Length: 333
Image (cartoon, rainbow, N blue to C red; front, side):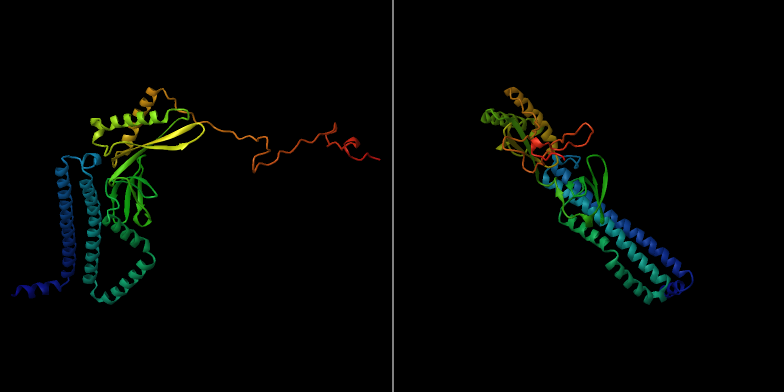
Protein backbone atom coordinates (compact mmCIF):
# COMPACT_ATOMS: atom_id res chain seq x y z
CA UNK A 1 0.00 0.00 0.00
CA UNK A 2 2.94 2.32 0.61
CA UNK A 3 4.34 1.63 -2.87
CA UNK A 4 1.94 3.85 -4.81
CA UNK A 5 2.46 6.95 -2.64
CA UNK A 6 6.21 6.43 -2.82
CA UNK A 7 6.08 6.06 -6.61
CA UNK A 8 3.96 9.18 -6.93
CA UNK A 9 6.37 11.13 -4.75
CA UNK A 10 9.32 9.92 -6.82
CA UNK A 11 7.65 10.89 -10.08
CA UNK A 12 7.03 14.37 -8.71
CA UNK A 13 10.78 14.88 -8.31
CA UNK A 14 13.06 16.16 -11.04
CA UNK A 15 13.78 12.65 -12.34
CA UNK A 16 10.13 11.72 -12.75
CA UNK A 17 9.45 13.53 -16.01
CA UNK A 18 12.47 12.17 -17.97
CA UNK A 19 11.68 8.66 -16.76
CA UNK A 20 8.04 8.97 -17.84
CA UNK A 21 9.08 10.33 -21.24
CA UNK A 22 11.46 7.39 -21.68
CA UNK A 23 8.74 4.93 -20.68
CA UNK A 24 6.30 6.51 -23.15
CA UNK A 25 8.83 6.22 -25.97
CA UNK A 26 9.63 2.60 -25.11
CA UNK A 27 5.93 1.79 -24.79
CA UNK A 28 5.16 3.40 -28.16
CA UNK A 29 7.91 1.39 -29.85
CA UNK A 30 6.72 -1.85 -28.24
CA UNK A 31 3.07 -1.20 -29.16
CA UNK A 32 4.01 -0.41 -32.75
CA UNK A 33 6.13 -3.57 -33.06
CA UNK A 34 3.33 -5.70 -31.61
CA UNK A 35 0.73 -4.26 -33.94
CA UNK A 36 3.05 -4.64 -36.93
CA UNK A 37 3.65 -8.26 -35.94
CA UNK A 38 -0.09 -8.92 -35.72
CA UNK A 39 -0.69 -7.32 -39.14
CA UNK A 40 2.12 -9.34 -40.77
CA UNK A 41 0.86 -12.52 -39.12
CA UNK A 42 -2.65 -12.01 -40.49
CA UNK A 43 -1.37 -11.14 -43.98
CA UNK A 44 0.90 -14.21 -44.08
CA UNK A 45 -1.91 -16.44 -42.88
CA UNK A 46 -4.18 -15.30 -45.69
CA UNK A 47 -1.40 -15.68 -48.28
CA UNK A 48 -0.46 -19.17 -47.06
CA UNK A 49 -4.10 -20.21 -47.14
CA UNK A 50 -4.38 -19.03 -50.75
CA UNK A 51 -1.21 -20.93 -51.65
CA UNK A 52 -2.58 -24.16 -50.20
CA UNK A 53 -5.89 -23.79 -52.01
CA UNK A 54 -4.19 -23.00 -55.32
CA UNK A 55 -1.46 -25.59 -54.89
CA UNK A 56 1.37 -23.21 -55.82
CA UNK A 57 4.32 -21.66 -54.03
CA UNK A 58 4.45 -18.29 -55.80
CA UNK A 59 1.24 -16.27 -55.61
CA UNK A 60 2.67 -13.55 -57.82
CA UNK A 61 1.95 -15.78 -60.83
CA UNK A 62 -1.57 -14.71 -61.58
CA UNK A 63 -2.14 -17.36 -64.21
CA UNK A 64 -1.13 -20.20 -61.91
CA UNK A 65 -3.79 -19.79 -59.25
CA UNK A 66 -7.55 -19.23 -59.13
CA UNK A 67 -8.66 -15.67 -59.72
CA UNK A 68 -10.68 -15.40 -56.52
CA UNK A 69 -7.75 -16.53 -54.35
CA UNK A 70 -5.41 -14.12 -56.10
CA UNK A 71 -7.76 -11.20 -55.49
CA UNK A 72 -7.82 -12.08 -51.78
CA UNK A 73 -4.01 -12.21 -51.65
CA UNK A 74 -3.51 -8.92 -53.49
CA UNK A 75 -6.16 -7.14 -51.47
CA UNK A 76 -4.70 -8.45 -48.21
CA UNK A 77 -1.22 -7.25 -49.11
CA UNK A 78 -2.53 -3.81 -49.95
CA UNK A 79 -4.55 -3.60 -46.75
CA UNK A 80 -1.53 -4.77 -44.77
CA UNK A 81 0.59 -1.94 -46.16
CA UNK A 82 -2.09 0.67 -45.48
CA UNK A 83 -2.74 -0.60 -41.92
CA UNK A 84 0.99 -0.56 -41.14
CA UNK A 85 1.20 3.10 -42.17
CA UNK A 86 -1.92 3.98 -40.17
CA UNK A 87 -0.65 2.20 -37.04
CA UNK A 88 2.70 3.99 -37.18
CA UNK A 89 1.07 7.39 -37.66
CA UNK A 90 -1.46 6.95 -34.84
CA UNK A 91 1.10 5.63 -32.32
CA UNK A 92 3.54 8.46 -33.04
CA UNK A 93 0.85 11.15 -32.69
CA UNK A 94 -0.42 9.75 -29.38
CA UNK A 95 3.11 9.44 -27.99
CA UNK A 96 4.01 13.02 -28.99
CA UNK A 97 0.85 14.46 -27.43
CA UNK A 98 1.44 12.50 -24.21
CA UNK A 99 5.08 13.63 -23.98
CA UNK A 100 4.12 17.28 -24.51
CA UNK A 101 1.46 17.09 -21.79
CA UNK A 102 4.02 15.66 -19.35
CA UNK A 103 6.91 17.94 -20.22
CA UNK A 104 4.82 21.14 -20.15
CA UNK A 105 1.59 20.62 -18.19
CA UNK A 106 1.11 24.38 -17.93
CA UNK A 107 0.89 24.58 -21.71
CA UNK A 108 -2.38 22.63 -21.85
CA UNK A 109 -4.34 25.75 -22.77
CA UNK A 110 -1.75 26.76 -25.33
CA UNK A 111 -1.74 23.20 -26.65
CA UNK A 112 -5.45 23.40 -27.31
CA UNK A 113 -4.82 26.58 -29.32
CA UNK A 114 -2.07 24.80 -31.22
CA UNK A 115 -4.45 21.95 -31.94
CA UNK A 116 -7.03 24.38 -33.27
CA UNK A 117 -4.38 26.02 -35.44
CA UNK A 118 -3.29 22.63 -36.76
CA UNK A 119 -6.91 21.83 -37.54
CA UNK A 120 -7.26 25.06 -39.47
CA UNK A 121 -4.02 24.29 -41.28
CA UNK A 122 -5.30 20.86 -42.24
CA UNK A 123 -8.51 22.46 -43.44
CA UNK A 124 -6.75 24.96 -45.71
CA UNK A 125 -3.18 23.93 -46.40
CA UNK A 126 -3.26 20.14 -46.13
CA UNK A 127 -6.38 19.33 -48.09
CA UNK A 128 -4.37 17.36 -50.62
CA UNK A 129 -2.89 15.15 -47.90
CA UNK A 130 -6.32 14.38 -46.44
CA UNK A 131 -7.60 13.71 -49.96
CA UNK A 132 -4.72 11.33 -50.67
CA UNK A 133 -5.28 9.39 -47.46
CA UNK A 134 -9.05 9.06 -47.88
CA UNK A 135 -8.82 8.14 -51.55
CA UNK A 136 -6.16 5.50 -50.80
CA UNK A 137 -8.32 3.93 -48.09
CA UNK A 138 -11.35 3.83 -50.39
CA UNK A 139 -9.39 2.35 -53.30
CA UNK A 140 -8.06 -0.48 -51.15
CA UNK A 141 -11.31 -1.02 -49.25
CA UNK A 142 -13.31 -1.22 -52.49
CA UNK A 143 -10.73 -3.57 -54.05
CA UNK A 144 -10.01 -1.22 -56.95
CA UNK A 145 -6.37 -2.30 -56.99
CA UNK A 146 -3.93 -4.46 -55.08
CA UNK A 147 -0.25 -5.35 -54.95
CA UNK A 148 0.62 -7.26 -58.12
CA UNK A 149 -2.23 -5.87 -60.23
CA UNK A 150 -1.61 -4.43 -63.69
CA UNK A 151 -3.40 -1.08 -63.65
CA UNK A 152 -3.83 2.09 -65.68
CA UNK A 153 -4.09 5.10 -63.37
CA UNK A 154 -4.08 7.70 -66.12
CA UNK A 155 -0.61 8.88 -65.07
CA UNK A 156 1.16 5.54 -65.29
CA UNK A 157 0.43 2.00 -66.48
CA UNK A 158 2.16 -1.00 -64.97
CA UNK A 159 2.34 -3.39 -62.03
CA UNK A 160 1.40 -2.14 -58.56
CA UNK A 161 4.36 -2.75 -56.25
CA UNK A 162 3.12 -0.99 -53.12
CA UNK A 163 -0.06 0.72 -51.95
CA UNK A 164 0.64 3.27 -49.22
CA UNK A 165 -1.61 5.52 -47.22
CA UNK A 166 -0.75 8.45 -49.52
CA UNK A 167 1.31 7.10 -52.45
CA UNK A 168 0.82 4.15 -54.82
CA UNK A 169 3.95 2.80 -56.53
CA UNK A 170 3.51 1.55 -60.10
CA UNK A 171 6.30 -0.09 -62.14
CA UNK A 172 5.82 0.33 -65.90
CA UNK A 173 7.05 -1.94 -68.70
CA UNK A 174 10.28 0.06 -69.08
CA UNK A 175 11.18 -0.47 -65.42
CA UNK A 176 10.38 3.08 -64.32
CA UNK A 177 8.87 3.27 -60.83
CA UNK A 178 6.06 5.83 -60.70
CA UNK A 179 4.95 7.40 -57.41
CA UNK A 180 1.31 8.32 -57.93
CA UNK A 181 -0.58 10.32 -55.32
CA UNK A 182 -3.80 8.59 -54.38
CA UNK A 183 -5.74 11.84 -54.43
CA UNK A 184 -4.77 12.46 -58.07
CA UNK A 185 -6.10 9.10 -59.27
CA UNK A 186 -9.47 9.87 -60.84
CA UNK A 187 -9.91 6.49 -62.52
CA UNK A 188 -8.34 3.05 -62.23
CA UNK A 189 -8.27 0.57 -65.10
CA UNK A 190 -7.48 -2.81 -63.53
CA UNK A 191 -6.28 -5.42 -66.05
CA UNK A 192 -5.85 -8.16 -63.44
CA UNK A 193 -9.42 -8.61 -62.25
CA UNK A 194 -11.56 -11.39 -63.66
CA UNK A 195 -10.44 -12.05 -67.22
CA UNK A 196 -8.94 -10.45 -70.32
CA UNK A 197 -9.64 -10.64 -74.03
CA UNK A 198 -7.19 -10.94 -76.92
CA UNK A 199 -8.45 -9.10 -80.02
CA UNK A 200 -6.63 -9.75 -83.31
CA UNK A 201 -7.58 -8.01 -86.56
CA UNK A 202 -6.25 -9.58 -89.75
CA UNK A 203 -6.49 -7.82 -93.13
CA UNK A 204 -6.84 -10.14 -96.16
CA UNK A 205 -7.10 -9.16 -99.82
CA UNK A 206 -10.52 -8.09 -101.06
CA UNK A 207 -10.75 -10.95 -103.55
CA UNK A 208 -10.02 -13.67 -100.93
CA UNK A 209 -12.45 -16.40 -99.95
CA UNK A 210 -13.61 -14.82 -96.70
CA UNK A 211 -15.45 -17.87 -95.38
CA UNK A 212 -12.49 -20.15 -96.08
CA UNK A 213 -10.06 -17.75 -94.42
CA UNK A 214 -12.30 -17.40 -91.35
CA UNK A 215 -12.60 -21.16 -90.96
CA UNK A 216 -8.84 -21.63 -91.31
CA UNK A 217 -8.13 -18.96 -88.71
CA UNK A 218 -10.70 -20.43 -86.32
CA UNK A 219 -9.27 -23.94 -86.70
CA UNK A 220 -5.75 -22.68 -86.04
CA UNK A 221 -6.85 -20.70 -82.97
CA UNK A 222 -8.87 -23.66 -81.62
CA UNK A 223 -5.91 -26.00 -82.01
CA UNK A 224 -3.71 -23.41 -80.29
CA UNK A 225 -6.12 -23.12 -77.34
CA UNK A 226 -6.22 -26.91 -76.93
CA UNK A 227 -2.48 -27.33 -76.46
CA UNK A 228 -1.24 -28.21 -72.99
CA UNK A 229 0.90 -25.08 -72.68
CA UNK A 230 -1.98 -22.70 -73.43
CA UNK A 231 -5.01 -24.66 -72.28
CA UNK A 232 -4.79 -23.43 -68.69
CA UNK A 233 -4.50 -19.80 -69.84
CA UNK A 234 -7.43 -19.76 -72.27
CA UNK A 235 -10.84 -19.63 -70.59
CA UNK A 236 -13.16 -20.07 -73.58
CA UNK A 237 -12.99 -21.27 -77.17
CA UNK A 238 -11.75 -18.74 -79.73
CA UNK A 239 -14.43 -16.92 -81.72
CA UNK A 240 -14.59 -15.23 -85.10
CA UNK A 241 -16.59 -12.05 -84.74
CA UNK A 242 -16.74 -11.58 -88.49
CA UNK A 243 -15.76 -8.77 -90.82
CA UNK A 244 -14.67 -5.66 -88.94
CA UNK A 245 -14.22 -3.36 -91.91
CA UNK A 246 -14.18 -3.38 -95.73
CA UNK A 247 -12.03 -1.19 -97.97
CA UNK A 248 -10.86 -1.18 -101.58
CA UNK A 249 -7.64 -2.98 -100.67
CA UNK A 250 -8.56 -5.36 -97.84
CA UNK A 251 -11.18 -6.99 -95.65
CA UNK A 252 -10.42 -6.98 -91.92
CA UNK A 253 -11.43 -10.12 -89.99
CA UNK A 254 -11.60 -10.03 -86.19
CA UNK A 255 -10.73 -13.02 -83.97
CA UNK A 256 -11.08 -12.92 -80.17
CA UNK A 257 -9.92 -15.20 -77.36
CA UNK A 258 -10.89 -14.94 -73.68
CA UNK A 259 -7.91 -15.52 -71.38
CA UNK A 260 -6.91 -15.27 -67.76
CA UNK A 261 -5.99 -11.83 -66.55
CA UNK A 262 -2.33 -10.96 -66.67
CA UNK A 263 -1.41 -13.27 -69.59
CA UNK A 264 -3.20 -11.45 -72.41
CA UNK A 265 -0.05 -10.18 -74.14
CA UNK A 266 1.71 -13.52 -73.81
CA UNK A 267 -1.17 -15.38 -75.45
CA UNK A 268 -1.62 -12.72 -78.15
CA UNK A 269 2.01 -12.91 -79.30
CA UNK A 270 1.98 -16.69 -79.60
CA UNK A 271 -1.43 -16.71 -81.29
CA UNK A 272 -0.35 -14.17 -83.91
CA UNK A 273 2.56 -16.40 -84.90
CA UNK A 274 0.18 -19.37 -85.22
CA UNK A 275 -2.27 -17.39 -87.34
CA UNK A 276 0.56 -16.20 -89.58
CA UNK A 277 1.45 -19.84 -90.29
CA UNK A 278 -2.18 -20.62 -91.11
CA UNK A 279 -2.37 -17.68 -93.54
CA UNK A 280 0.83 -18.86 -95.23
CA UNK A 281 -0.64 -22.35 -95.69
CA UNK A 282 -3.60 -20.85 -97.54
CA UNK A 283 -1.27 -18.95 -99.84
CA UNK A 284 -2.93 -15.66 -98.98
CA UNK A 285 -0.68 -12.60 -99.10
CA UNK A 286 -1.64 -9.85 -96.73
CA UNK A 287 -2.19 -6.52 -98.49
CA UNK A 288 0.50 -3.85 -98.04
CA UNK A 289 -0.21 -0.55 -96.40
CA UNK A 290 -0.44 1.78 -99.35
CA UNK A 291 -0.28 5.57 -99.18
CA UNK A 292 -2.91 7.32 -101.31
CA UNK A 293 -2.07 10.65 -102.96
CA UNK A 294 -5.11 12.78 -103.76
CA UNK A 295 -5.07 14.52 -107.15
CA UNK A 296 -7.61 16.90 -108.66
CA UNK A 297 -10.05 15.25 -111.02
CA UNK A 298 -11.73 16.49 -114.17
CA UNK A 299 -14.26 18.39 -112.08
CA UNK A 300 -11.72 20.89 -110.83
CA UNK A 301 -9.54 21.29 -107.73
CA UNK A 302 -10.13 19.43 -104.50
CA UNK A 303 -12.42 21.04 -101.92
CA UNK A 304 -10.50 23.46 -99.72
CA UNK A 305 -7.46 23.55 -102.05
CA UNK A 306 -5.84 26.92 -102.74
CA UNK A 307 -5.54 27.99 -106.41
CA UNK A 308 -2.04 27.86 -107.83
CA UNK A 309 -0.94 31.33 -109.05
CA UNK A 310 0.05 31.56 -112.73
CA UNK A 311 3.59 32.70 -113.50
CA UNK A 312 3.96 36.31 -114.75
CA UNK A 313 6.03 36.83 -117.89
CA UNK A 314 9.01 39.15 -117.45
CA UNK A 315 10.68 41.42 -119.99
CA UNK A 316 14.33 41.39 -120.80
CA UNK A 317 14.96 44.09 -118.19
CA UNK A 318 13.43 41.92 -115.53
CA UNK A 319 10.24 43.97 -115.06
CA UNK A 320 6.83 42.49 -115.73
CA UNK A 321 5.81 43.09 -119.37
CA UNK A 322 2.86 45.34 -120.12
CA UNK A 323 -0.10 43.94 -122.01
CA UNK A 324 0.02 44.57 -125.73
CA UNK A 325 -2.70 46.13 -127.85
CA UNK A 326 -3.41 42.83 -129.47
CA UNK A 327 -4.30 41.40 -126.08
CA UNK A 328 -6.83 44.10 -125.36
CA UNK A 329 -4.46 46.58 -123.78
CA UNK A 330 -3.91 50.19 -124.76
CA UNK A 331 -0.85 51.25 -126.70
CA UNK A 332 1.43 53.80 -125.15
CA UNK A 333 1.43 57.36 -126.45
